[in-house]
Length: 314
Image (cartoon, rainbow, N blue to C red; front, side, top):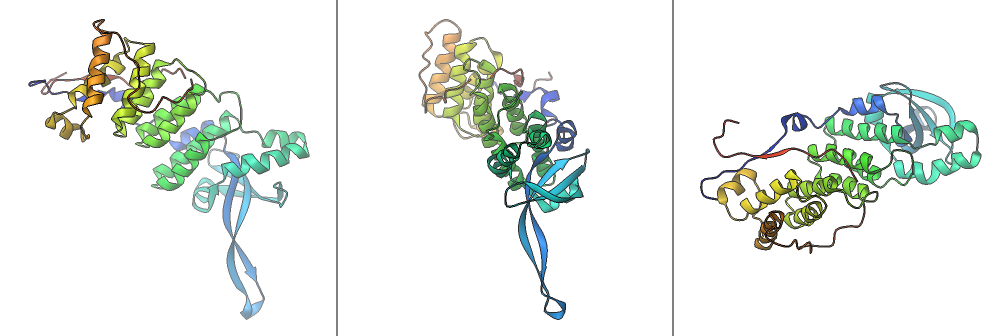
């Protein structure tokens, strides 16, 4: 590569921020889920009284931008008793979301009871998904990555079928998670998007990009192969292939990107793909690593990639 010095520059408008804040997602959505909470329980009387904390499950629903109502769940998994008003700060500090419990126990119990109100309040829809995703971002903003990861993992595994649960939803949220540096979670969302489309070059590029950020050259190449197969002229795919070639053995580039060296077999396949794009070679789309998970997502959420020479003023 002689004196050429490449730098991966993403569109500044895309990369300056990870996207809307958690509160913005919650304002546009609606948190509705089961949460666990530790509740003080007083036992005994007078000098012999003691207080301990008991884990309870509560049904929580958002009523305003930062306002919620919380009701205790009965043994039959149904909300009961007086509704308690709580704030977002209290929700974050004292409650933990239990999406799987909500899906597996509370939603069926409400539907079995069969009242119109139950049918409405048990629904998991796109607004609920957005609200819970926003809550996960609020955890990140408050430096609680463990709680955020647990909630995002549950959302990636959601089983509820609702209008809007498609490639766009999972792909777009995967992009947000990648920008936050949560590469494994971003990949999980992109893989859910693959369940809806089989031939989307942008989604395959998004997967390749997430694996690149995660230092997994082999998997990144696997998805670039798929992206290239469906759209040989997609610039971001070609650019990332060129970057792989450049990062095979150049110590300056490896230090600049803080990346491990690209394995020779991966770099060789990247060169082959680039040559195939020029029409000089037949494309060999055999995967270097494990087979790509079957699936399907079309989205415009592909980052802009630009290579610059060292010292360029552009």
